[in-house]
Picture 1 (cartoon, rainbow, N blue to C red):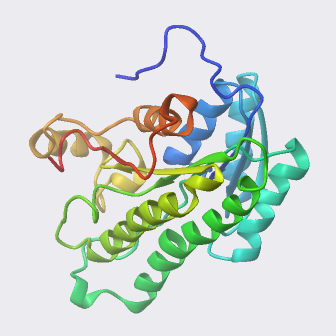
Picture 2 (picture 1 turned 180 degrees about the horizontal axis):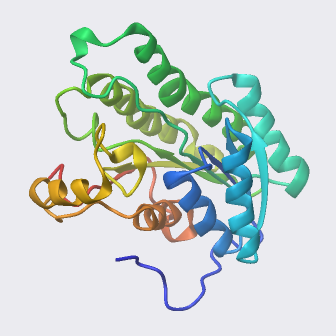
Length: 262
């Protein structure tokens, strides 16, 4: 069940937001939600076609969006994405770092392929660092500062699972990076937090060869809530952390997993 407000909200009117990994999944849901609340949204990712679809969905709903192709594991491309947002809309008020990959799922840590390890660290850790650095460089010098939300996971910082060691390590690093950067930069007006979703209604949450119907049966047994979270539910948590409603929330890591990590 989605938690969509009964009346329109405008918490982000007049602001500019950047969302990485916005071509699908949680990144797309966050971009749509920000636009629905008045933000001008720059969506980034590696593939132009999914980004164009996200922009089309936002514009069809009356919002404003711009696509920018970028690989966040490259510092120059992460910086260029921020520059595009500022050049087009004049500021960067909110950033959501949702770009992430899942590699080596089901493989024990001792057997993880080196290529999968590097891919996990390049995007999930280094990509978040490069994005943070570019976003902070802009926000610390503008009136009003800004808010950043990183997407971590319940796996790694909050629980473990067999065959997910590489992914868990990369997400534990995101949570640690969030806490450290939050402390480093709050005095400069840059407020940084994280969300740690569990399984969501996305293809990444499906096991190899699993259908959504099969996943639903599995989650009834595995999750205290009895189901996966919707991307809209997770996006609502992201928007809370990015909004003035959370003005005194600094360095938090909000778990959204139906009680799995309790």
